[in-house]
Structures are given as C-alpha cells and as structure tokens.
Image (cartoon, rainbow, N blue to C red; front, side, top):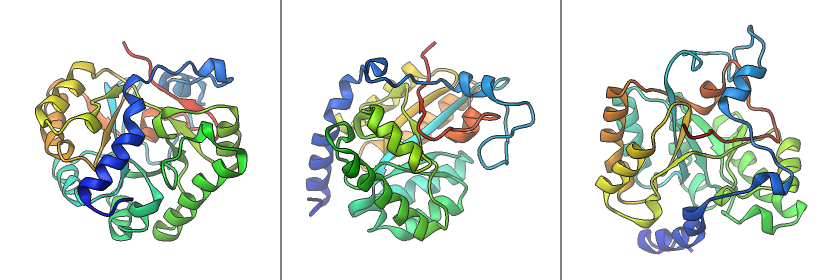
Length: 261
C-alpha cells in the first residue's frame, strides 16, 4: 500500500468511495449530531472555546470551515503556502500510517502556522466495522504520533467515511476526541478536474458549513485558491472547526455536523 503516488491514491480512493453517498442516519446508531449553532447556544457567554484565542464571532459573522482529510501528502506544503498567502486557517484531519509518520516536518508546520491538527485514524479502517479495542488502536496510535511531533494531542477526529456509532463515540470520549463530520463535499476522490471541485464546493457553500476536501488528490490543491477567493467575495470568513463552535467547545464523544441552509 502507498508504494507509489498513483497506487496510493487508488487505494485511498477505494477506501473513500462510500463517502460519495454519505446519508448517515446517526440517530439509528444512538448518536445524535450537534450543529455549530447548538455548540454556541450551549456555551456560557464567558467561554471563548477552542484554545481561548477566539478571533471571530460566528453567531454574527458568516463563517465557514475549510477541512482537509487523509494527509499530509506531497501537495500539503504547497497547500500551506496558499493558506498562508490567503491568511486562511484550516483544520487538517491527519492519517497516521504513511502520512503523519512519513511527513513529520509537515505536521509540525501545520501546527506552527496556526491550523488545527486533528485525527483521521491510523490506517483509515471503517471504525464501525471494528471492535472496541481496534477502534481504540486506530485513534490512539495517531494521537500518540501527533502528540510526539507537535507536543499537543488532537481534540478532534473525523471517522473514515463519516461512519460512527455508540462504540466509536465511547472510545472517542475516553480519548478526549470530539467527532467532526461535514456538510459540503466536492467528492474530490472521484475527479482530478479542479474546476469541477471548485464548482461543487461553491454550489453547496453555506453559513456555518464545514467543507471536506483531501490534500492528497491531484485536482484538489489547485482548486483551493479560487475557492477561497470566491467565498471571501461572497462574504464568508474562514475559521477552524474550534472557532466555528466558539464560544462553545467540541465535547469529547459528541458528533458535530452542520445543517444545510
């Protein structure tokens, strides 16, 4: 697995294809998702949320969160250059095997440049297919690896394909991890067409939305500058996921998923 760039992408694409039809009925799994509005409404007025460095008030400002899954990869340094130039924070849900352990300097840079570093499991196994000990292994190995590199363990995780249940929630709670899903996807695992990726994001963008992209696919990073420029033109302010929830905090074990307008 991951022996070549093209082989790696085919393998991860196979693992991600089911996300194209993500219509989860989380309630059937005993998991009720919360929205960013729920998180903000539940917070006390003096709670700044996140790391305490609240920069915007998403109850007043039209916020949107840009998130990237399954990296870091070869294109992530260029993506970080774009985000730095555009002064846009993002949230990176990182894979452990062949990613965090292969690109420690990139992980360190993501954290140093003010982006949120989050957990996307060790090997992208579908957590709802695993027993409790296997779920714990997938999450804790990545927690340990990121913590060793950055000095801080993640507080957010994204389950592969967005699939979660009560067991995943219980383990996440034990490990101090909140679960973050999404409301906007370009399905960039299925195309290398940057214009199409851009179109899909822009057609579905909404206030308090969470955009799902992958910084490991050829068409994605080239699409990001124009996505940012157009959303800024429309009046959106880019924030990390913790900033989107502020003054609330992402509570361990809970699932957060925005509602579409």
